[in-house]
Length: 258
Ligand SMILES: [Zn+2]
Ligand SMILES: [Zn+2]
Image (cartoon, rainbow, N blue to C red):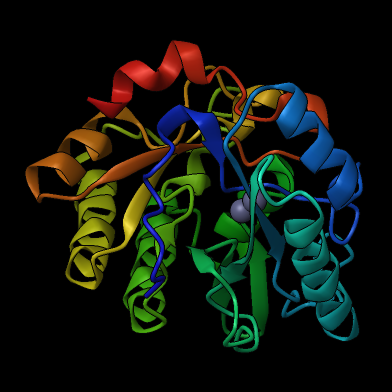
């Protein structure tokens, strides 16, 4: 568990950011400069942990030491102007994260199936084909498998739960399932229940808005309401892949924080 107060700067921080070390556009220093220009008090880097499928969007295992050293050097260089944290977006199926990070965002980007993985957030088509191939076309069985992975994620004790309903990324373009369906909601609430005892914060994540997939942040309103009812705490993150999108539409969505 992070020793830091990860809620400290409210909407004047973005702790979910990606750089050219993974699938982001800009260097860490370009991101820090953009954060200062925007008046932020803190930026946290959360490079993607190595993909269990070796995919290019994630950091390569051999790049991690350089990533950490680069971010630590920036923290020193910009000390007094902005706080710079080094974290990681740790996928549940990745190898363990380094121990010396400031915080971990725990995320589930895959559904584990008998001979590999379905990537949840790559394309609507992959998700639909995965549903047909591995779940007999029953999208709720697929959602149950996705949310069941949060039992595993809880064991990693992340500091922040990333985009808990990522499986709805394409739902506005391709209505593969109904996110109000009782089976869907029961599975999603089960994932919240799994994470609550860890004390992790839950993201309100605007990343899919900045990338044009969704019109509302993760998580959907019924899940957010359930998180609150269980005493979960939330924070806004941008899941930012470009410097200009830091804290994307936080002004508008900060209403969900209260
Ligand atoms: Zn993610
Ligand atoms: Zn991310």
